[in-house]
Length: 231
Image (cartoon, rainbow, N blue to C red; front, top):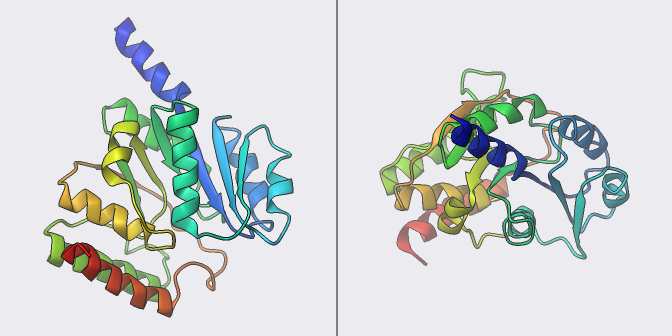
């Protein structure tokens, strides 16, 4: 029993939150106030913002990394995860978005799954939630296409709320620099038949003009096909 308690403590103390952000001055203070109540193991990656996001983040007792130019969400996530696993020797990472659309109160749910032995935990919003219709259609479409091409159903692929261990990170590493990072992670999960557990997360939207647009959706379709064909 003591050994199990020690392992759980290690998971908690060596799990890091990775938050990418681009021009998040409007929300990042609120996000970090909430997340720092749950843990101090936080890495914020400012992806070349033109606003004062970095200065705001540096007011908190966290690790702040910065890209000098905007490289994209995928690149920011990779910078944060590499830093967590290779520099901070993290045992696990929980990824959250920096736009206050992920509820910090749900962090313990991801930790619980890790405690129970899950090495990969995906946050999923219900398609019956208050998610805008266009997003519901987009999410369902992406999951359906991945199911068709890779033979594995993965819900809410576009959700950025995820947790995984260092071992899983090496299996799902992505090359995408942009928003298609979520899709590439899903494709890697499907192709490598990785097991995962789900956490039901709240649906929160602030700015409908943020996130994936029509052009991004077209790129996603092309990305799905390229991942399937291995090109």
